[in-house]
Image (cartoon, rainbow over all chains, first blue to last red; front, side, top):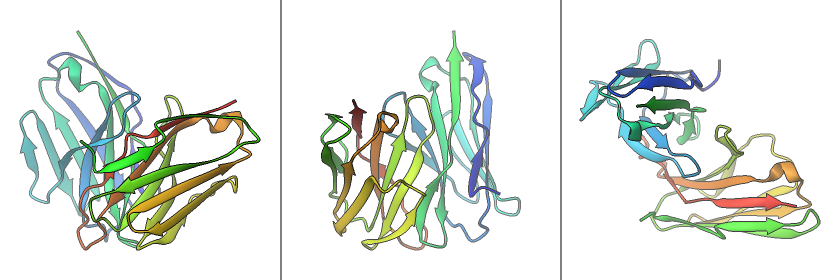
Length: 110
Length: 114
C-alpha cells in the first residue's frame, strides 16, 4: 500500500456541482493531515489543515477518519477558479517529515 | 510572498554542463525537500533532509546530487543531465515537530536540458 494514495482523476464537473476527493494513508502513526492546491505551472499551496473533528472553510469541508486512515475534501458550489490539482498530505511518522500524494485533478466547466 | 526562495527561476543547460539549483528558507524550518515535476505529471519526491541529514532518497540518478550545508539552505547539483530531466524542480520546507506544521514551497526552477 502506498504511503498516501489519491484517485488521480481528472474530475470533470460543471459549475455549481459538489465534488468529493478521497485520500488514504498507510501509516497509522501519522498525526498531521493537510490538503494542498496546485495550479498549473505553479507551486503547491496550503488549502486547509484537516482536524480529527472535521473542519470547514467556506465551501470547503475536510474530514479525517483515523480508524479507516482516510481523509476527504468536499467542495460545494464549484467555481471555475477551483480548477486545479488537489494534493493530500500526511506527516511521515518515521521521519516527522511530510509525504504528498500524487494529487487529484479537478476541472470545473461552465 | 513566499518564505522559500529558489534560484534561478529558469535555467537552460546543455547535457555536458554542471549547474546548481539553490533553495533558501527564512522560516526557521528544519526539514527540506526537493521535488521534480515533469509537464502534466504529479510531484515526484527526490530527496528529504531532516535536521540536515538526508532521510530519503527516492532512487534518484546520481547525476542529481543534493547538499544541505545548514537548515536554511538546500542545493541540488546537476551534471550530465538528459533531456528527460527537463522539469520544474520545487523546493519545500517544513518544521519537524510532533504534529507537523504545513510545508511551504518555493516558486520552483524551470529547467530545460538541451
